Length: 283
Image 1 (tube, rainbow, N blue to C red):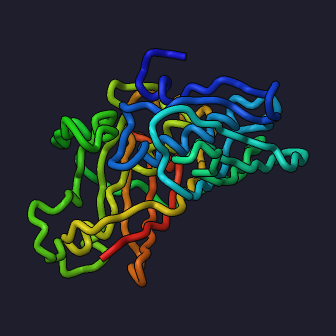
Image 2 (tube, one colour):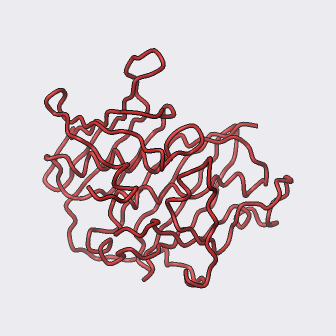
């Protein structure tokens, strides 16, 4: 384990002597987000349980996590169980468990993952990276010094789609798609070589689309997050510690829930991952 804040928060200790497929971890204050840890870090933790599991086959191609409850500060258990292994794919069930207010162990996150041995095949990219100003020509968001601490862990440089400067209920554009569109450059701060866990965490960096769409600061919470990994280890290694370009927009807002879709490209234009999440909102 390195001294990087991401690796410290990601650290897991195998606990196989107590329960097969179980790891122990501790939440990190460096990744706090209002009522609990940043959801992207929770996703990265359960993916890391898969990545460090001695029975793993291949690399991640899909990850879905469902947030059952906010985590509290302190210890937790991460469970990654391989439920089926085929010749080139492997299917996983995931859980994060933590003691509740009564001291009883409760599930705070459920999920699934698929790993696979990648093969060289015909490939195409039908979602090319948009032409935007380079990262060094875009101003960085000044992160807050308290409250939503996890933002300080990233160097984020929005090209378009900043959060509203005034919460007045007015959309930033007459075009609904543009009103909820964000494009930004992002990388770990301090810089860290990209891997599957950090890519999974970055898939959750986009602010809730309803805030941009309505310019109303309504309470929100991610219910489910899915990441599809289109890159293998070689493409991640090529990205190194460089910036990724992220793009996200909302799609439908209705009856207390909305979804948002995102894409993450390397600086050289390789589509590394696509992501989708369902978010709860309250009037």
